[in-house]
Image 1 (cartoon, helix red, strand yellow):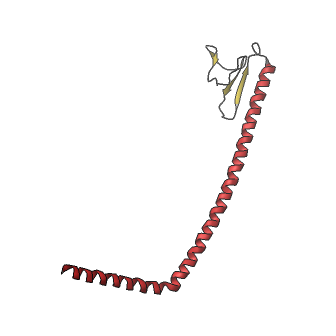
Image 2 (spheres, helix red, strand yellow):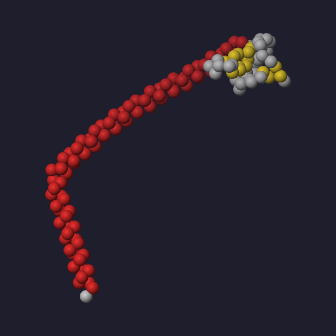
Image 3 (cartoon, one colour):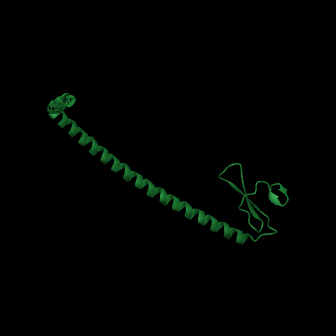
Length: 133
């Protein structure tokens, strides 16, 4: 019999990985380790080993799927990052060109805005004078 205290037929801290034929697992102090306790009187060890192999194979398949998905996500993020870098470079280039245009024709725009404001002010002034009569 392996070490461990029994109470009412169960081990302290028994995990949900308990088989029907006397093989059970317990979490140890380290989260990476699992302790197995085998009662040779009640279980067929070959069946238990076969069951454990199936579980290990399933876990390996799940781990491989997770690895595959992680690689796909990483590639997707890399492509997205490259797209964003290209878009940022395009926006920066367009802003540089726009700033050059504003500097080249900025004085004309300021004159046009001032003339437009004076015309609007004059129209509103005369409209208010004529509407009071």
